[in-house]
Length: 172
Image 1 (cartoon, rainbow, N blue to C red):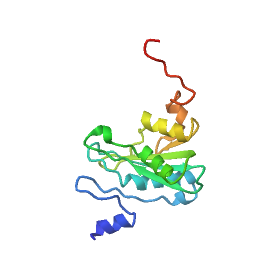
Image 2 (cartoon, rainbow, N blue to C red):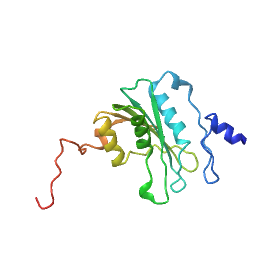
Image 3 (spheres, rainbow, N blue to C red):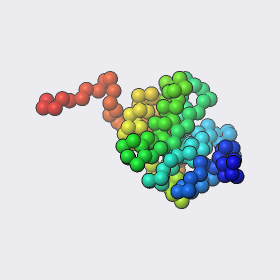
Image 4 (cartoon, rainbow, N blue to C red):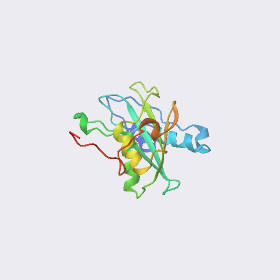
């Protein structure tokens, strides 16, 4: 195993690939006492495992669920040459939680790094991710975006699809 593979196995660097730059995966000292900082640190760790050969944007997410206190489920974006098959970091983190038995989403933290490893605070979850967050959390679920702040799902998706929403039929 090469030195980089050892570092990956120890969680120090993201998976390496000739087309992807190495990003430092460090945890700030204050992350151990601040739960939001700790969640952002977990999202940063997840971003290191993103597969983003097309966009170069490595997104990481970390999800907390009310019904699994203390557990953090991580996810990263996984791109595909057939772009419609790409999946976002938010959904991979939430689905990892669901697979582990969680159902009540409390908070999701997001981080993004560009090809050069610079932070990209302008990210916002897509509509599909917001709808999945609503399904498992509700409109007041927190979304923490590194460098941008804390928001609620309702800030981005004021009228989600759900059991109480009637979709008009064509021609009516």
